[in-house]
Image 1 (cartoon, rainbow, N blue to C red):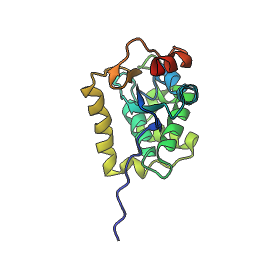
Image 2: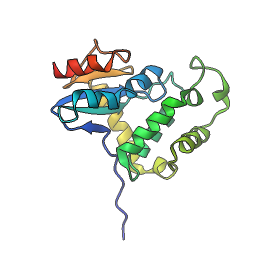
Image 3: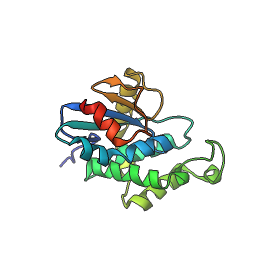
Length: 185
């Protein structure tokens, strides 16, 4: 009997007609700040009025970005789907110094390996990512996130889109109420 190929659960919350897309790099402090507002935004705007979709935007100056991004998307392929991915994003954000280099080029992580980064994420999240990290469908999901960002002219994180249009006037430092007003206004 063949086991069905696991699929990535879309990183989407809410079910409203207004689409708010956020492109995040998991170890970027500004992306972490934006991610931490996700639940408050859904509460403020109403999950029946908006849909929030996250896209991973790996960035080369964040040295372990591809490994951490792969962990987020791998988590979405496990039972629990997008909530696992959300958990990985939360633990990486809460302990980001352990997954990033000081000033992008030095510090204790110079001795880190991809395996030690994965083990750290597994330790904090309680998820076992090693099997999911090797799912063949994971590569296609990573490429889908990268392609979608490229097609929309996204180069940095966080970047915000409302209904398919980049919003240069939205930032991670803006209050949630400001985001909700732009979405619902």
